Amino acid sequence: MFTEIVIGPYTLRTFSLALALAIAAALGLAALRRGWRFGDLVDVWLTGFAGGIVGARLFHVLLQWTYFSDNLGEALRLNAGGLDWHGAVFGGLVGLWIGSRWRKLPFRALLDALTPALPLLALAGWIGCYAVACGYGAEVDTLANYSPIVASEIRDIYGILAPRYNTQIFGMGLALVLMLSTAVLFWRKWLYYRRFWLVLGLLSVGMLVIGFYRGDEVLSIDGVRGDQILDGVIAGYSFILAIKPFHHPVTLP
Image (cartoon, rainbow, N blue to C red; front, top):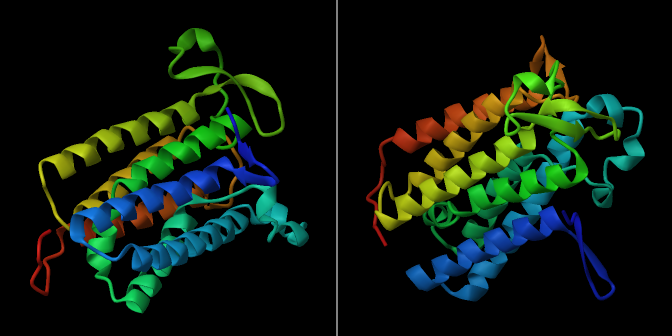
């Protein structure tokens, strides 16, 4: 797996590049389908991308506060790795909202256009974790009791090899299922302006379930992983928005 891509004198982290390309591709398709000016979409993409990176790093630092409280100098070092998907969602939404107001584009339609980016980013994130051993699974007693798909010999972030749950594989499988589901939603033209929140909610539920099998350390509250708490919050909020009635007339593309 490649965690970095070298282009001439530039070195790009694979996850950051995938995030940028996924958002750019989704907005590019939106420009073709809805007739928006591409220059306006680039501005919105930049604000969303910047917000996503800042939010992803901030949430990573907070969830790993036990480490960063003693190493504050590393908190702003993006090149050292460490991005959290919850923060990417929060920061990206704020950035997109700012960009949509700036360029006077409909925020609801922008989110709908970005729905395919959600499973793409999830897939990129789990591939990145597989490459650098983040998000690794909890140890199991013996591999004899588990299918190779469920558990295998995996290294943790410290390089220790042990029989663990294949949480990175679980995550990639979740992303692929959501990619197929998203394709069906767009093909059948179902749930306009609701599918972003539906897919985000399903992604959050999947991540919450995977969290029960993870072995990496993270800030916990009363024995509950901090990332699972965020998964639950995002899932609940997303499903509420997915079923919430529209208060204004909706123009379908």
